[in-house]
Image (cartoon, rainbow, N blue to C red; front, side, top):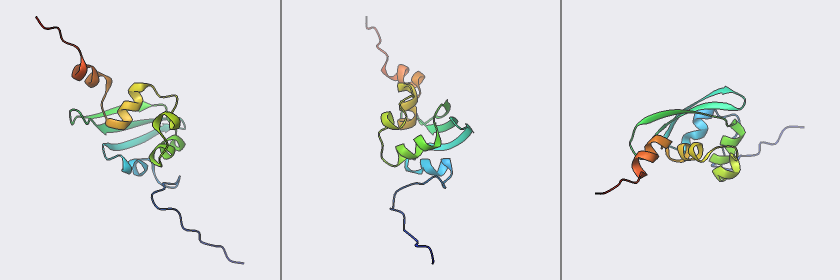
Length: 107
């Protein structure tokens, strides 16, 4: 008996893709390097400033695949802080966020 070749649904990224390629649907993310099973460094370009930043995050490949395939980031990566989620979604760091949206006193 032969095997049946079942086509994959388009738009679904599987575990055979490298992690940087998995982020291809998120164009502001330029690179991701695994540091172990549950940690990676993600490089992203800030939507606010255009500056490239790198951030170590405690996320797994499976969580990345879930997110890029349509799960909400809160569901896919519930352990991430709001800062980590914002960085993945927009490339904006907490320092940038604070400087952009800090309240200033007017005289």
